Image (cartoon, rainbow, N blue to C red; front, top):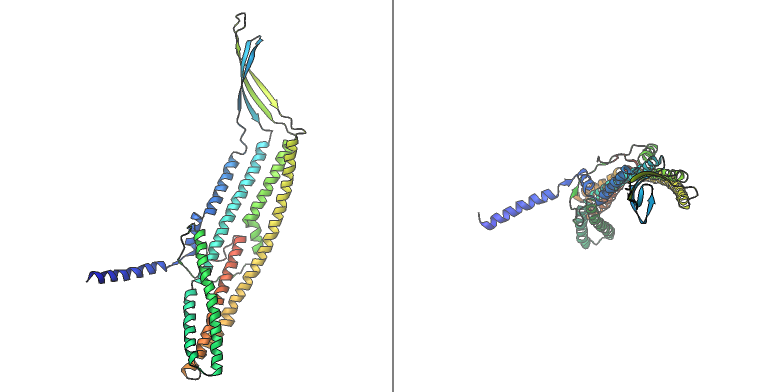
Length: 418
């Protein structure tokens, strides 16, 4: 075999292999796993959660001891000798029970961060799923564009040969529909490109465009009632639970400053005094002593200000919790209604719109074969079918994305397993 022929043969087989590899559909779970590992927003949320855990572990720790040295410019004569220098080691001691209160504050803040991490995770999962379902809808676009162009070309050729007014009306109507289809399909093609870049970002790929194919996700039916979804959302919704923990942290903070306003703090000290010999030659004796200090918080303006600020923060966080709860119920009810309407629209396409259109194409083709009508009528029916196919794909995608939104609120798995 000649080298050139061998090269062309290898190139042909190699291209087929690459094409087969590139066109293999990517499972949704694979993309979700990649996003969980590489998404930068989720990595940041995990670090924040870890920071909160570290803060909780050291929340009740005492302040470090203080070491001080006092040097007298004029030695003071005492019975122990000439006092010249004193070394003091002082340990501040928080007011009784403050460690437990600080741990309560830190624990609530840490749990709030953990719920925020869960929210970030669920949000990324929802975005990946939504983009996946968009791409599932949009990956059929090239075939529909090609079919639309072929029909448009055939109708244009046949329309140029027709002279009957009625047939020309059919041609013009079909061409208008094909033009409308072309605009819709062009917009969908642009949307597909944007969806691929968005998915690349979610997967942590940066500017590297994700250019794979997706699998058919099926069409699961929503059988869970709104009341059950609401109950699940109240127990699960990470943002609501995070806000609840923020309110608990603010309440614990207010209680801490309330105690701080009337419970004194103490400090214990160990002192070592260096005594030099007296002027009469008496040897000096070094001495040690203990000291006890106590802060008096009564009437302290700074502590009073912190106490009032903490009380206002507690009220604010509680109001935000109530607002989050009300917003959750409203959003969930809206998402549930959208899911029901989207499912009805899918059923409308599958049961009432597409079957008559297919029947119309079949009838037009039979009439054309028997010479009772021209080819233009069959092509016009096909042009109408393309518009219906686009509408059905859009309806299915909207329904799946409405289920994803319900998953985001409730934590339930209503679409493909994760």
